[in-house]
Structures are given as structure tokens and as C-alpha cells.
Length: 193
Image 1 (cartoon, rainbow, N blue to C red):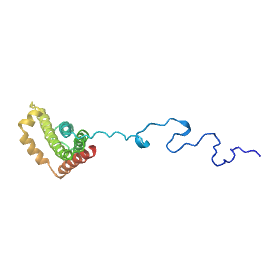
Image 2: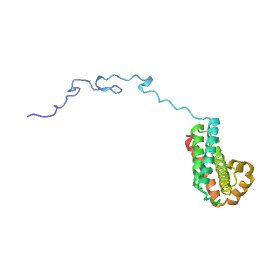
Image 3: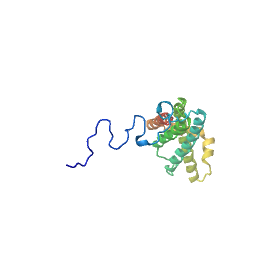
Image 4: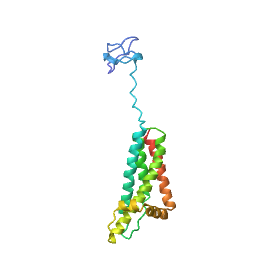
């Protein structure tokens, strides 16, 4: 009778002529890795903690300025030639995301940064809307033949722009402003981890 498998082993014998590998050894004579004491590999290096509050605040401030100008540009682009504009509250959420992400990624886990995310996001939305109103007023004045830049409107007539902003402020504006602050806080906290 013939069989296609090896005969049963006698105790202590290896049909292939080698000793079975012992615990902790590589099988069949492979070279063993050289580890530290105990035979375990050394732990992986830990990434250094990013906890640079000053740089995080600086980058967050720059992100807030960029976001304010982007908000103003979108506001001006959506304005009609008669001076009316459509409020784009969803952009305020993007402002909070951008500011919070910049703070958290650069600044790290410091608990001051999410609070700064709230403040910078709210300021960016506020100044973005004031800048947007200044751009709209400048454009509307240029249609009437006057040549006044948005910067001059912003600096010389800031009080008038603020009054217009307060006049246009409603529950929806408050809602998007609050969400921008909340996003600035939450994203700075998540990105810092």
C-alpha cells in the first residue's frame, strides 16, 4: 500500500531532518534580529509635541485676515448693481474652519488656541462683512460717477459701515456668526491633537 503523505512521526523525530524552531528563534536557521534587552524591538519614536502658541496665534491671525478678505470678495461678487446684496452666511462657517485649522495645526494642543479660534473667527466674519459693505458702497458710488476706493470707504466711513451692518444684522446673521465661532473652537481643538 502506498501513501502520498509521510508516515506518522515517532515521538521526538522530525521527518525533514531539522529541529523545530524554539520560541523566539527564526525558523530554519534565518538570522535573528538584534533587539535590546528582553528580545523586543525598541519603541517607535514619538513625534514631538507641537505646542507653539505664538506661532499658532500668528498663523491664525494671518488666516483670519485672508478669510475676512475672501468673505468680503464673495460678498461684493454677489452684490447687485443697485447696492443690495445677498447674505452669504455659509461662508462664515468656512471662515471658522480656516481659522481653527490654522491655529490647531501650527499651534498644537494648547488650551488657549480654541478660545483664540472663537475670537479670531468672529473678528474675521465681522471685518469681512464690514469690508464687503465697503466694497459694495465703493462699487455703487462708482456707478454714480464718483471715484472712491473701498479702502477710503472703509477707513473714512467706518462708522457708517458699522451702522449699516447693525441695521442688516438679524437672527440669521447671529446664527452664522455663532456657528463661525463654534467652528473656530472645535476645529482648532481637533486639529491640535
